[in-house]
Amino acid sequence: MDLDVRFGAAIAIAEEAAQLALRHFENRGALTVEHKGLQDLVSAADREVEQLVRTRIAERFPEDALLGEEAGSGGAVSSRALWVIDPIDGTTNFLRGLPHWGVVLAFVADEVVEHGVIVAPVLRERYVARKGRGAFCNDRPLKVTGTAKLSEAVIGFGSNKKTPHQPYLAALDQLLAEGIEYRRLGCASMNLAAVASGKLDGFYEAKLSPWDALAGMLLVHEAGGRCNDYLADDGLLRGNSVLVGNRPLYDSLAAAFKVFSEA
Ligand code: LIP
Image (cartoon, rainbow, N blue to C red; front, side):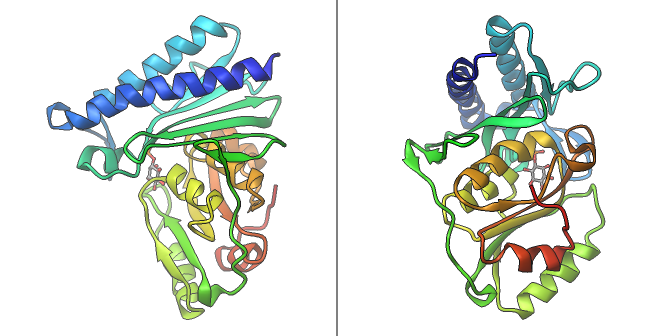
């Protein structure tokens, strides 16, 4: 399969979808907000953006499979040639008018994440990464930090209602005692992009879906960071925890969050 063509298409499709999302963002007051679960929102904007992405992919790569946050996979998930779509990652931020949200695409071929694209139109940032070819924001190469002390680290966190919050608080308590600072951006892909860009030193969330995680984790890996093995234990189908960090801090973060698999 032609990965170069699919990478170029992923960028173009994500850019077009981000412009549609931005139009909805600027008119978000007109959107009807639905609750998929506790603190888990969706609107017509998510569905329309995902439908646009699906249409564009089907036009060019009808043989490829699709897995999206809103419309699912339509059956068994094959990773032979799979597009993984989050039409608006950070939906709650989007609906409340906060800027940390984006359109997220990843492409998986035979269990390997080949490329990822994140477009955050309010921030005017386009993140791309290809396996073995580096990570970039607006065509500028990305590199994780070299922060080596927890007492000098700023770590991103995410939490959601899919897992109990107590373990997360216990780990946070331990890390705060070590002197870390932390940020909670409310959007997994933006946290991951921040680690890849050297703005944060690490990020953890106990349970994320592949559409939230795969593109940003590839960014971090290609920017020189370390990542847990998200695809282990059927992660593509069942979701998994996400832990990423720069090289000096990863082991300390993994111990605090009890994450034992590394990609
Ligand atoms: C969100 C993630 C965030 C997580 C939220 C939600 P969505 O994705 O980006 O990290 O804490 O629960 O899953 O639902 O906005 O695409």
